[in-house]
Length: 75
Image 1 (cartoon, rainbow, N blue to C red):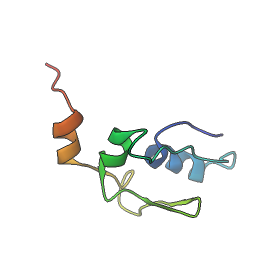
Image 2: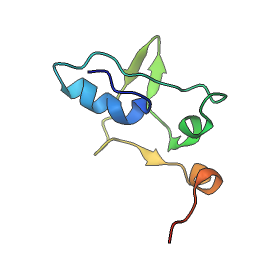
Image 3: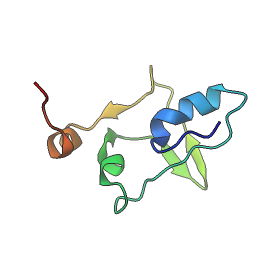
Image 4: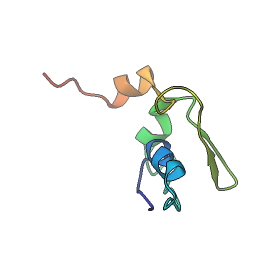
């Protein structure tokens, strides 16, 4: 299994699966500014390893600044 794009969400399923292999990430703000700004204190990526948070759920908190910048209210 090698899911694509949002590494901070997909890493959990890769970590939990015996078929988990790799998580694709695009954390370069020039390539994907939304990914770079979407979460407050995202998991750390260093030397090719992503360290998952131990908070409940996915351990992610959406950035209010990113929601204001990129979001659009749908009625």
